[in-house]
Length: 337
Image (cartoon, rainbow, N blue to C red):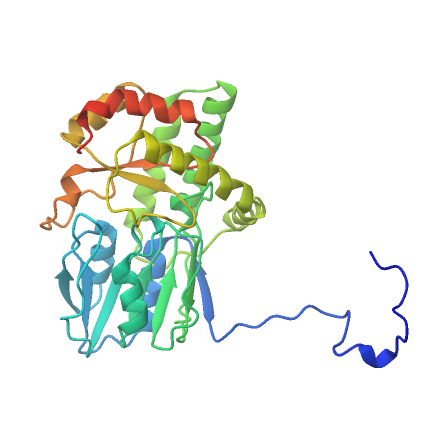
């Protein structure tokens, strides 16, 4: 480290100010926050002029998305997602059409990149498995959002970024959801790490919280606890990312490839597994206190086999190689090859 000036140093060597306040640029991006992904979808749809427009949705999606869209006076068409989580969008008319794409499992699939580069109308990018990395370079209208409650120990926080104006409608406190989910997370902490309480108590509390969320038709306001949880989560994000990357790589070795090799998320959250007799296998895992989520139940009765065979393996720092080996032992005979 230099402790003395360079020879022939003169004050004009400073070509910019040093010290004072920090600087920052929005880079043309407007930002917003809500308590959940569904609230952010409502906020996005209020921000877009939907008159005489059609929303193009994937035929593999969370039912909540369709429920929210139906609350708006807009036509809905579906496009097909294949078993490799890809789609062909080139043939669709872009005029007066809002395209909704999902970054399944946090991955930028080919059709996602195509839509970012070539879709000239409104584009909604659903990255509920992601950290908040939007396509700042895109010049055509876009709305990007995530949902931290799906991928981290955060009660409820969704980040919205857009190169368009964001609706400024008042947000509503969903206090019952916040209190129930906070309590559920605390009860689970006590049960898992301190051997206090029972499994039924925290599961029941999580279910109550979700019912409160499902009943709301408002744009939920983020709460102070979630903001603090998110700050703590991002403070250790690189350590978390590294552990997830190691777990993801190990799980890929254990389980046969479940889709094409393009599944390389920046921040792993789940590994999708194609499983024969998925529901029976899932019930068998539950008997062993292993709870793997389904992304997603086919609540809209759409024609896509992904709803029938897919189960998601959580990838994060709560789990060890031994955990993944135990899961593999229980379901290895049912994995689709």
